[in-house]
Image 1 (cartoon, rainbow, N blue to C red):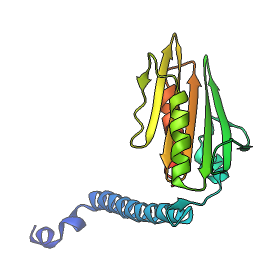
Image 2 (tube, rainbow, N blue to C red):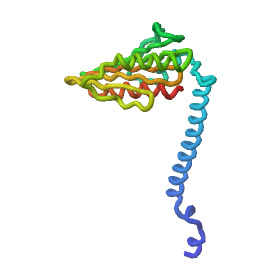
Image 3 (tube, rainbow, N blue to C red):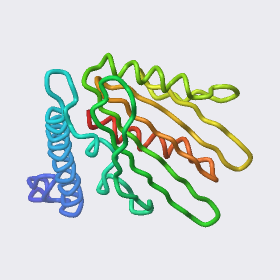
Image 4 (cartoon, rainbow, N blue to C red):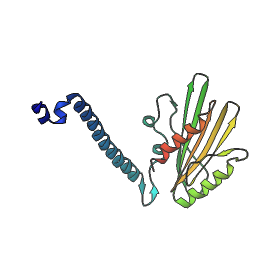
Length: 194
């Protein structure tokens, strides 16, 4: 009995020690992964901007294949043009999915301008064109505006966000009630890049 008391708790409980060690190992890996994600996330954002302007090509600002879940059907990225002061270039990507008796489609767009003033003018102009009668506002945060439209067994959502010299646009439609969350998740993917 005295020999058993001299052993440490860890030696007396090898199974529990192994389990605790495993959890400690997982926690350490999670900490290092979180640090790594933070560093690479900041590096991506830094490489996309210069002197306060977003310089990344708009093709890289719309959701990429690797960022989209495999249940979605992803169309190719297309160039878009608008007749607006200071417009440099834009990109559009259409994404859709079908499950059982429901389906969803999302259109994502990124418009890049030569300065924030021109981007602000375009954002204000596009915001005025969204019909807000009888709809719920889509809460996207500062310099973002969007709406949700409910109809019988379906709905749609539309939103715009302004970041420096880039305007992001989302329109999602669905035959289920996940249309708003689909649009918001793709908008978040785009906003995380700048």
